[in-house]
Length: 537
Image (cartoon, rainbow, N blue to C red; front, side, top):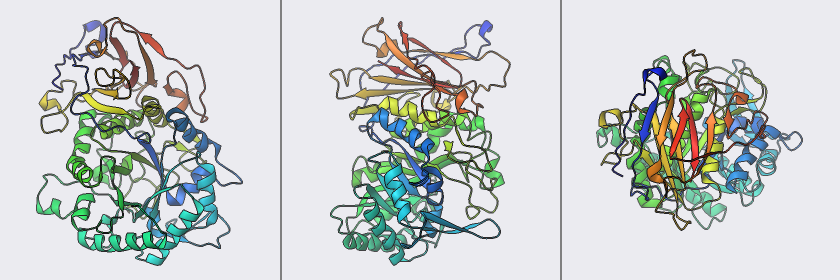
């Protein structure tokens, strides 16, 4: 889409930081649009060792978790998918005689050594997640114990009839056993084939890779070619037995695993579209290759969050992360990532000896289901981003997304400030075309408008706004549109009751307050700094 945009500062009376953006169209579906969005685009990954902490057990179910997940199902019509996995999956073992759902063995230093699960673990997953939840189960590869992996797979298929979407063999195998693409593929292909035979699978049932390392740039260097990832594993014959259903890689844009990376894990860096898009663009060649080989919906980000090693206090637990999560989800979808599974859990000593966090639950979690050393039971602002995504998708199964502004360069990558994004990564527009409607490809059904100008609630100066002129995307200049707002007092807001989606708060897991949907005419939509709106056309 060849768009011309005008960004300018308004008069001095409004501090010269108010922005205006005019999008002249055309309004028709662009050739850069994605495949049809998966209804479970916004999904969840729960660390194996912490899963029961989140859902509870049949005797004491966690109603907060259930309500928060049910809110998403109610909007979309099907549940968000759930992955049970993470670093502790590679030290998890099966014991059919275990009298509790889970036992985490922690040594005297506080290090979680291994995890044992029993039948009540699957009972909790089956009974306490929203009905129909599809689950990906992460198996232990690092121990190189095929019999143990088979036992967990077999118990999962028995304990979760009709709910196991896929199995992963290993979590982040590029971080242990010195795997090459070939040595990993030799074991993975054998295990997946033998488990499929033992459990009588008649179609592919495995999710490949679950790797951790970011793609190296530039591509096509010896170091980049040596990486273990979806594409290199496929090239090494990992799917020779036709067992691969999907392919997963993990993304953490920032990290506090060591002091060097912690220094740049800041709120201003997080809430910036240019930084985000340039990061996710690293995966575009892999996404394209996997889709060509396996199908359009086959590349997923099976684990992700803002800052690895459990996030950062004052960054990951703020409204700023909610804006980052919204932008991440939509931008990933626009480059044909099928689903994203945001990771939930707690700090683990085995992740890094130099990490910033110790104990409790992670600062990047969307909610705390239990009291812990990092805070009481609560919902964080980031959860609201998933409500925005769910309401955007709704019941449509033919919705396609495109990044309208800043748009794309001719090579498919995002437009940067150097390439003409004069908003410096602060203003973003996504369009959604519903091909099930008669006007489906002529006009978008929805627009998402993001103003990522950083504004903190501690600031004394007036809050800037951006004026988005969307007239060219309307069928007539006087057409009335509906507007729902994602807003908080500032990007640094850390409380759920200070965050609103369409006028409502969800600090107790259920909506509180009056639902607000504004009606706007004239094609101009005002969006405060550090906020976002959904425009329903």
